[in-house]
Length: 212
Figure 1 (cartoon, rainbow, N blue to C red):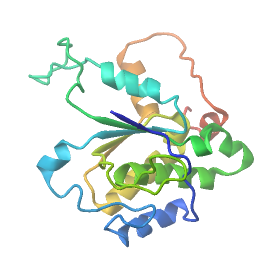
Figure 2 (spheres, rainbow, N blue to C red):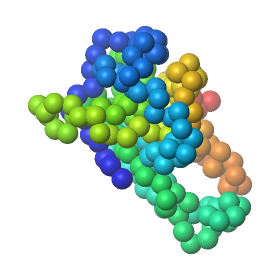
Figure 3 (cartoon, rainbow, N blue to C red):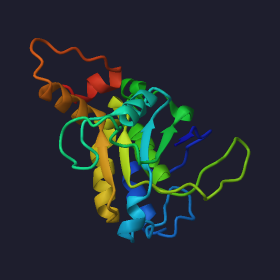
């Protein structure tokens, strides 16, 4: 598992522009782009890591849940714990955009467009090979791309989930995108819990209407 906390993630591209920008730079050498051939081989794709991102380190709780989840039998793939974590054979890359945290406050100052830009850039970072090992260092291109993206942030899920899913479809890459709001709501429904349900959320998550 790798945990990447980049020092800076800025640029002039807006969320809608990033889709075309990445398509016109398919070799992944330009900023905010990725190698479009990384998923061309199904067998190689299976061995790529899973990407998890948040605006900071809070999403590490989601990563911990993934690392310890035991809801299926690993051999039969049927529901039911078998004593082995479901993702025991997977690798993970965690990305925390600490340079622009917290995401939950952007809507309060009417900067949701910029927030959406940041969220799509988070996804592009995980899809690419470029990363900075430390502040002031030259970028390296040895980070593996990911085969799935988990948005471990309610606010980022509320404002960017559909943007990322549409972008992945436009880029025609076989990458699964999951957000915590949908997954959390499904988990509550499947638990047969009765009574009221409390939600702890940022101003941005509440303002988005993602929790009706």
